[in-house]
Length: 276
Ligand code: SAH
Image (cartoon, rainbow, N blue to C red; front, side, top):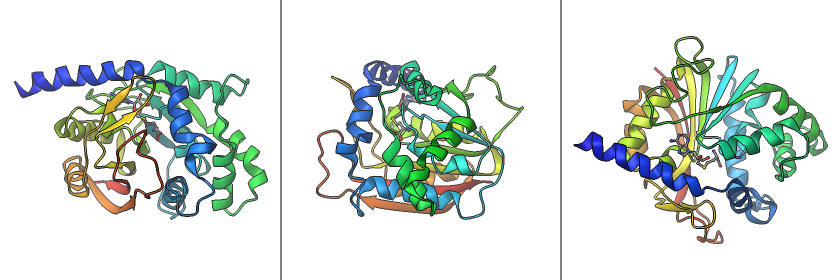
C-alpha cells in the first residue's frame, strides 16, 4: 500500500511542476534585486563560497561531473567548471533545459544575466572580476549535455541515456535545492538520494545543497511547490542509507532581512560526502 501511495504522490509532485516557470524562478531566486550579492553575510555569497571551497580542497578529481535537477540555473557549476572537463546538467522539465541551452548557446535567447555570479566566483578564485568572460567561455565549453532526469526512477537518466550505467559513472554528483522539493515525503527523498548516488562512482564526491525546515516555495504564478521539511539528522540518516560517508555538513541560518514571500525555509545546508 505504501508503495502505491508514494507513486500517486510522486505523480502529484510532477503535476505541481507543470506550473514551474523558469523566468519567475530566476527572477525570484537569482536576479540582482533579490540575491543581495553585495551583502557579505548574504545567502548567495555563502552558497558560492561553499561550492568554491568544496572544489578547491584538492580532493576533487576526475573527468565528469553530473548536476542533478539543475533547474534553469548555472551558479552551482561555476566553480566546478574549472576542475572537471565534462559537466552534465540535468532537469525534469524541458522548459528548464531549454533555458539552460539558450544561455549555453550564447545566441541571445536567454534573459538571464549570470554576469554578477561569474564575476563573484572569479573573485573567489583570486582572479579579476573582469575575467568573467573567460569563465563564461569555459562553462560553455565544459557543459557537454543537458539531459532529462527523474530522481524517482531507479535509473534517473533512463536506462538508455548516453552515459547511463554501467558505462560511465560520474566522478562527482552535485544537486542543489532539488530532492526536497521534488519528493512528496521523506521516504521518497531517501530513495531519490539512493537513486542519484547510484550515478556516482565509489570514492567519488557528492555535494548536496538544500533547505532545512522548508514546507513550500513559489516557482511561478500559482505554483506553490510543497517541500519535505528536512533536519540535519534526517539528512545524515538518508546519507548513510545511500552508502555515502559525510565529510562535512554546514548550515546557514536564514537572515532576518530575507523576505519569506517566496519560501519558508529556516536555513540552508551544504554537505560534502564521499561514496563508500
Ligand atoms: N538546482 C537549481 C534548481 C532548483 S529548483 C537551483 O539550485 O536553483 C528544483 C528543481 O528540481 C526544478 O528545476 C525541477 O524541475 C527539478 N525537479 C522536480 N522534480 C524532479 C524530479 N522528479 N527529478 C529531477 N528533478 C526534478
